[in-house]
Image (cartoon, rainbow, N blue to C red):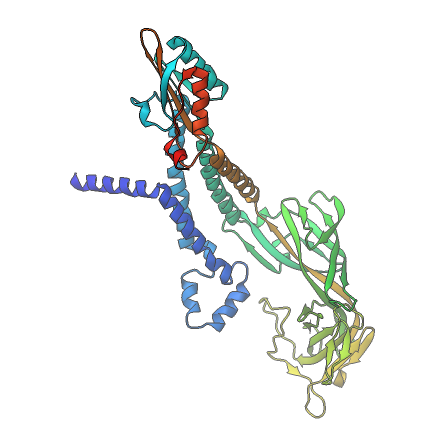
Length: 516
């Protein structure tokens, strides 16, 4: 039995400690500190390549960070434990306070203490009128000033400022709702990116995303069906002498088709995302996609269409890979550089001197090799796997390089085929995301701020009147009490009550006001 009592005692102590407001504040601080690594280190759900690069660059201590969950902070066990403890602590704080507050709302104000002369703002004197008349006048005055009044045979006590505790409770309840909203969003939200070339479309299915991250409770069936086609992408750059080449405007004209087949044309801008059902579509980036045609050694078209090139600098010098694995008798591949406004540099190389496509050129080197068996393994479209490939060279052994302008064709040596530069298109990178708990977080934060404002502005105050009937006069004592320190105006409030009671006395100032 003694062990059981000790266990119960320990559990009560643990619950009292966990449900205290001090513990809740400490856990809130710890949660904020625990979230810092999530903003400083790359996170695997959103940036797996960045995590791989970080691990490769820091082979000594980065694996330890990985074991401790620092590359998936918000999905780690220790972060979830802090989150859950904070949630339980807040619930443990709120429930008793709410019960006490509801009881106080039902109860009348407390009776006057035995000695009013010990309270701030106390005064006493002789009132004109009978005790009942004096108390009637005090009660009427207090009710007119929206006090809750308790009337007894020889006293009146009043209290107001109950909304202060309401503000406190609203703040703490909204804090819990904010945590629920964040957890809801973390579990059921998703965020993915996709690159779309002008004239092409994106369907909201899992296989259409280039990158995709979702919460633990997310299921692919939750993706709402819609299609977005990029009709045109307009880009404007500064052409004047000041900030030449700086971006001035990015506008994507898209056609959105919903699940019912309804089609609408809309405009997507950098700071003007689209809302498609419960999904938000943001414009993240853009670049160029050279349109090429690859013919193999037999003259057949092995590849034709736009190829996404990734920009490398402010003038949109872009790099990409053109692959023709179905070319015969040899498969072909090209490592390319796209220059929107090509110009020869002083060192003899080619550079882009302006981000807009004023003089586009495509520079490539060529790789060839025997056909490769299809394995179904995923492959990076922006990098060339050179396994089994040989770079074509000139007679002197230098790598074979070709420069193409729009509308030109380069014939590969030894009858291996050709590469045509047919034109170029723009591409844009879109982010499609949804956060189902976002509205709850927003509303909770707004109500929490409102509750805190109410808590800081409401003045909880108590006033007391007690009569001491005498043979010919009515002896009267009046006093007040502020339930929050540092509040002014108590003296004026008691003075107004004294005047309403007809007390013939001068109100003494409170100690705090005398010091001022």
